[in-house]
Length: 253
Ligand code: 13P
Image 1 (cartoon, rainbow, N blue to C red):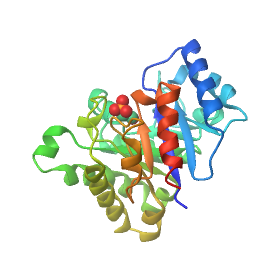
Image 2: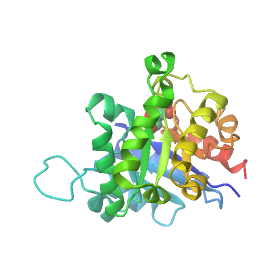
Image 3: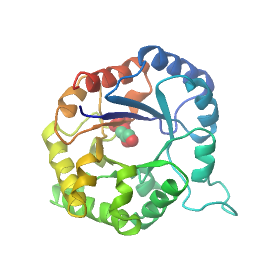
């Protein structure tokens, strides 16, 4: 049986009231599935609250970013151990918004990936090309650079504890998802790149697709052999939309 991960990246959205309503809907609608794991990644200030609300549910908690440092004089930062401490089991690293807007390099992302694992978190490593890069025929080269930095710093064996998310920048928040075949081509490339280091790790690696995933396009994406779930932005903020995506994953079993 395949194992899917349906992960919601709330980005900088939410409020206590909105989160409570969303989580109520998700808890009622998703009671667990052997082949599908559901994850929500709220902003930092809400993590502890959300952890409490998720107690006893089948929904896991993750964060959107982590410091590469363990502790100390890093004002405004948050360590992997702190995130574990409040109930996170996952953390997103290298989201394209952080690479583009906060200037995170592939080396920074690799350091965060290593820090996440040391702190007991499963990193979700985001990779993806911009529209210009795709149109110039550089998609695979961009992905390789982002992936190789982490493979080199962390070693392929750590990918047994990690997830990769392919998020083409041109598909994020645009309503213009990659087609199932476009996504599958890149996912297969990512798996082959990891297999070049260790085939067993590559075969088991969950590779999520992110970029305008909705209830009505999820089934087509998830039917592809190398697409093991989704990293979902906008549609993860509405319980019905997110549940429809989880249902599409459950229907693949
Ligand atoms: P959208 O689903 O809103 O396109 O966002 C995708 C994303 O960036 C998830 O990390």
